[in-house]
Image 1 (cartoon, rainbow, N blue to C red):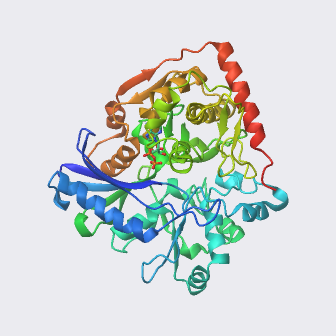
Image 2 (spheres, protein in one colour):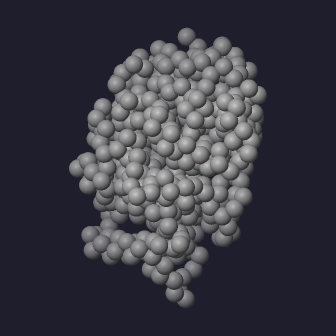
Image 3 (cartoon, rainbow, N blue to C red):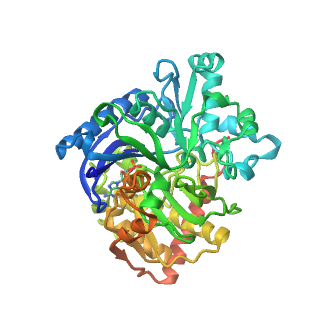
Amino acid sequence: MPSYIAAIDQGTTSTRCLLFDHSGTIRAGAQQEHDQIFPKPGWVEHDADQIRRRMWSVVERALAEVDATAADIAAVGITNHRETAVMWDRSTGMPLTNAIVWQDTRTDRLCRELGGAFGPNRFAADTGLPLATYFTGPKVRWAIDNIPDVAAAAESGDLAVGTVDSWVVQNLSGGEAHVTDVTNASRTMLMHLGDLAWDPELCEAIGVPMESLPEIRSSSEVLATATGPLEGVPIAGILGDQQAALFGQACTEPGEAKSTYGTGAFMLLNTGTQRVGSDAGLLSTVAYRLGDEPAVYALEGSIAVAGSLVQWLRDNLGIIDSAPDVEDLALTVEDNGGVYIVPAFSGLFAPYWRDDARGVVTGLTGFATKGHFARAALEAVAYQTMDVLEAMHLDARVDLKSLKVDGGMVVNELLMQFQADILDLPVVRPEVIETTALGAAYAAGLAVGFWESVDEVRDRWAEDTRWTPAMDAGERERLVHGWKKAVDRTLDWVD
Ligand code: ADP
């Protein structure tokens, strides 16, 4: 048996390739950032061709680090930022336009039009999703309506559409496969959540030609064969990044949840083989499907801006030099000094779903310093997570004993302690915090027998650090009251 499983993690800000050994330990890894393209306020794009080149480069570097060749890799698994729409020419394999990224808000008017008299929940019963700029289907429709090359390809039948996983597999397989998995398909607004198939009525209503879409497969099965430096290696797993983190955190039983703090923040709760609808502003989504087994569903609270608020402090305000500096700056003050930041840069996602919201800073006085901004930015991430957990209580009546966390921000001690305090719940970080890549590796490894069973995945999960709540109830109530008022101030901003 070859020694490693390769995971390609195509994130919002970077592409990573990690090699995991049989114990689930990372043995090699390479990472490269890609450009974030902001053509207009609210628009976010990626150069799909740049992503293709960077993918090959990180794969080569990860292999070189341990002198591995394709023969040492048992399988490759993919995980990716979800909802982003990639459109390419089926005959040449070349992108027709930049990828339209999940944070992009250009479809706000289109989403309102699609909702019409039914409102934002027009397709919620079938898709588990409200009409919001977040999702893929309307992004593709926008491109067909506004980009002549995309329109021409749609007309001639040459248009190929996919989320980022499809783009990665298309390239990895040398153009052989146009596939996606159920988790990514469940974020497009084009798949029926019960049938796990593209829905002709949804495609017609949203305006996406069905023949442009990839084949929907399970999250763990041999999908295609890789080429290039991974020549001959089975591509054997795909999971959207948040679903991959849920799997990597071994949340495989109903009632188990995790929260990932990256560019955005995402809490997912495993609801088992039953899909649970939401009345409280959560998404109903596919958690994973292993081969022919029944699909497992999840409730999800998606927060658009988490780590990207720290990047904004760094890149737009210039008050820190690097993301980790935010903690030292926040520690220069004792508390938030009454300052709250609500980073509704792309409107508010869960549980509010308000495209008309925009970011605010409230409570400013002459006393406020950049330290308070740093503190308020970190606290905003914790408050948004609290809002989502409240919605999970309402929808699923779950009573978590602790919250498993992961993602780039969980090295931040101040944030993690504040999160435990404001939730009044222990926060637990596992030994392997690269849970997204690990989840994709597990999906691929299970498909080729590198790992035997889901029990093995559960046995390998190990706790590293625990933060215990230490804030008194009165203080928590006072702070949360301020947050709720600040959220109110963001609403009804965009006319
Ligand atoms: P993604 O997978 O979405 O690209 P990551 O999980 O790699 O994101 O996390 C990166 C995010 O974490 C960035 O937005 C960055 O600003 C933030 N971040 C990284 N280190 C810290 C830190 N020490 N404190 C706070 N935020 C951090």
